[in-house]
Amino acid sequence: MTENILHTAYLAAAFLALFASAEIMFHKFNVKAEVTRKYVHLCTGLLTMLFPPLLGNHWFVLLLCGSFLVILLVSLKFKLLPSINAVERQTRGSILFPVIVYGCFLIYTFYGQFTFYYIPILILAICDPVAALVGKRWPTGEYTTFGHKKTLSGSAGFFISAVLTCLFLIVLVDGVSWGNGLIVALIVSGGTVVAEALTHKGYDNLTIPASAVLTLMALSRINLLDVGI
Image (cartoon, rainbow, N blue to C red; front, side, top):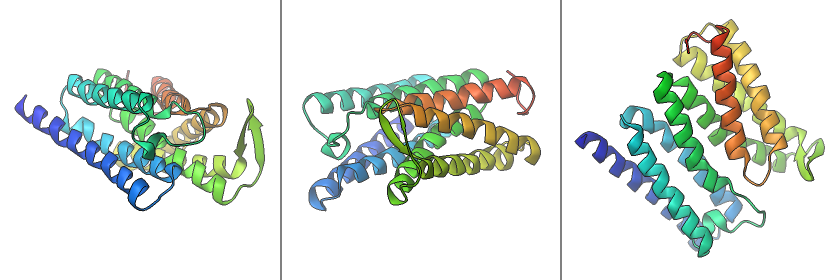
C-alpha cells in the first residue's frame, strides 16, 4: 500500500511537471498551442505506460485520472492552461484522455493482459500526433468526413506507425508469432485509422483506443492472440 501511494505521488508530480513545462514553452518561448498540446498528448501517453508496473490497484489509477480530469475541467472553465486549451478548433480530447486511460486499465486488470492496455494507449499517444504532423507537412489526398478535412498522407502515417507499434508489442513483447502478429497489427491498425478518420472534435481520444481494445479482445477469441478471455 505504501509503495502504491509513493508511486502515485511520483506520477502525479511527473504529470504536473509536464503541464508546467508546456506552459513554459507556450509563455516563455512562444511555442504554438497546437505544438504544446501535441507534446503533452505524447508525453502523457508515455507516462501512463508506467501505470501497470507501478500501480497495483485500479483505485490509484482512478485517483490520478480523476484528479487530472478535474484539473482539466477547471482549466477549461476558467481559461487556464493555454498550452493545452488555446487552440482554435473545438475539442474535447483532453477531457476524454484520462477517462479512456482508466477504462483501458480496468480492462487490463480484469483480463490480466498487458496488450489490452499498452496497444490502445500507445496508438493514441503516438499515431494520432503522427497523423496530424504528416498531414500538415505533406497534405496529400485531402478528403472530408462529416464536414472535417483529413488527408490520405496523414491517415497513411497513422496506419504505418500503428502497424509498427502493434508489431513491436505483440511479437517482441507478447511473443506472438510473426504471422499472427502481422495479421493482428494490420486489423487493429485498419480499425483505428478508420476511427481516427471518422471522429472529430477530440472524440478520437475515445474511439481510437476503444476500437483497438475491442478488436484485440475479438481477435483473442479466435486465437490470433495467444491469450484467452
